[in-house]
Image 1 (cartoon, rainbow, N blue to C red):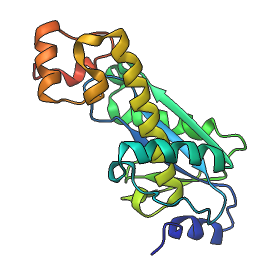
Image 2 (cartoon, rainbow, N blue to C red; image 1 turned 180 degrees about the vertical axis):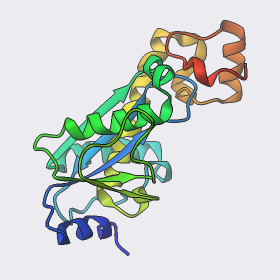
Image 3 (cartoon, one colour; image 1 turned 30 degrees about the vertical axis):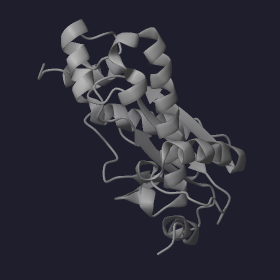
Image 4 (spheres, rainbow, N blue to C red; image 1 turned 120 degrees about the vertical axis):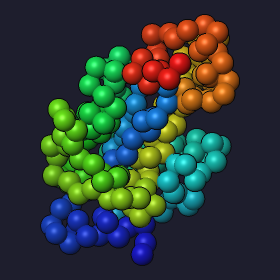
Length: 201
């Protein structure tokens, strides 16, 4: 198996512009959920490319720049915390991924979606697509999308840390760490917190 197995299968079916799609930030207590879509040149070489969770932060930053430079098209989208609360995280993930696909120029004619879900109760991926469990370890395009989504979200959480310094967003990026829960108990939630994720407080 190579990192181009899923793309090759789509090309063999007659699709040409195949994008990989992944999201970042489904689990945190605060901040948006991000998604990215990437169309790479066929068989492009990106040394060290892998699922963003298996790549060091420094290498992710370097890969981010390389992917943006090399990609035939790329797009990043997000759904804010208030909308996550309104529609639930699964629907928000689907919305962010479809927004990322829609943002590609040129457009993709087929999408490879990381995971095994392509719809929630209200929102579905409408582009022609396949889902791929652990796709970010099997598809170069999905792995590239995972890098763009993760780095974009992390950068945004660092920006939020300047606006809400009491929570330490620059350290935990909104995830439910011990420090984050301590700060929540001390200061209460801010507008960037997902209220539906805080019911255990």
